[in-house]
Image 1: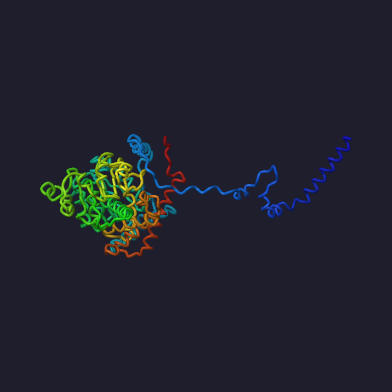
Image 2: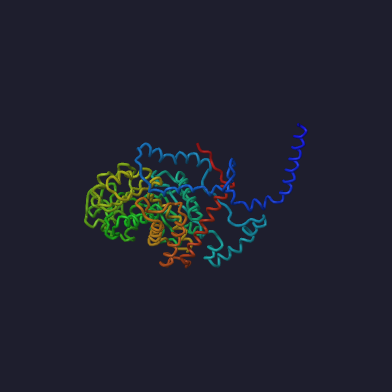
Length: 516
């Protein structure tokens, strides 16, 4: 019996082997022909992976809901506001600075140094001597910006000196490059004398295509900027003034649309009469706001004609505003200035109780409130909403509607440099503001989305194109490029700048610190 079984087993094994041999050439063809059969696997066997997509599709995620402000305690918000500073104390010493200089030309071998340096470099030198405009062709002047500061009003820290201001100026250089493709270099100078600062900047002109003034105290910042704009043949701008103003105007344009009011008829109260709000006042007039419908307050109250003796001598810009604005001659303090206002723009001191709920309650219906002190706005946004404001913007990235000048200067300078403009006019800033507003409008305005964010890639090329075209229209551009040419050039330079950095980071040439 066992012998019979052994013989039978041997025979079965032989038959199986022969069957396998007969079918050996066919598996690929058979598998290809029966792919659809994978949808119905044999019992007890797992379905092939390719059948998985045929399973019921998962439910689509619900569309993103508008940001809902959740009241946090002051302690929680302060802790959140302090975290970037804690991280900065780890990352700044880790990198020992945020920018460096890298070659942009090829170095195929050491022989190339005879082209880029002596003796070959003598030829472009002589070409520039004979044709000064060729400096833009042979060098990086056309994409090089100096970030100049005397350190007398750094952020909200006051007069901390030029060395202490250097981390801010390096940060500015990083933003210029990553967001605008602009090569910017920090220069902190050891003088508080406005005349020396003016002279210093004028002496820099051969090497730079533009100047970004930064963190210079008022009132001298006004004279420094006005003088340099008149006397320099390259564009000079003060970001604390023009940059903040351009982005604020963009937000205002869309806020007014949301609440359904007329820019020429709205009443605006400005709380704070520093460099930013003085420039904002000037810009919103250019944008269509009626000057006499503006009321501005400094630390002593409303600016009006009765303060001539106090303002005329030492605060020329405030006195000019007192003459141009406040058509009804209103006097008093901030609460009085806000009564019946359609819009509040505050750039004053940290809150949260600098602006009070009861003051907002006395504004017009459907009011717009911009409270832009950092790190704590003059009033919490949810408190402003509870008091009756329909639209609220702040200077913080963790709240909706951040009014951030980083949305302005990279694109504005990109467009300015690309047409080799001789200056940056207020109209060029307004063109940037209107384009910035349109980017948001194209995506759909909401009460919590007035203005784009920095990660919206089309922002900067569109701004650049708008600014460049306005420079051409005003006759301050050396090159006449179309909107499409400007957009394409800006998009290329910005995308290449980001790609280079991302490659360095991916390859480990820009290391990542270990954070707790």
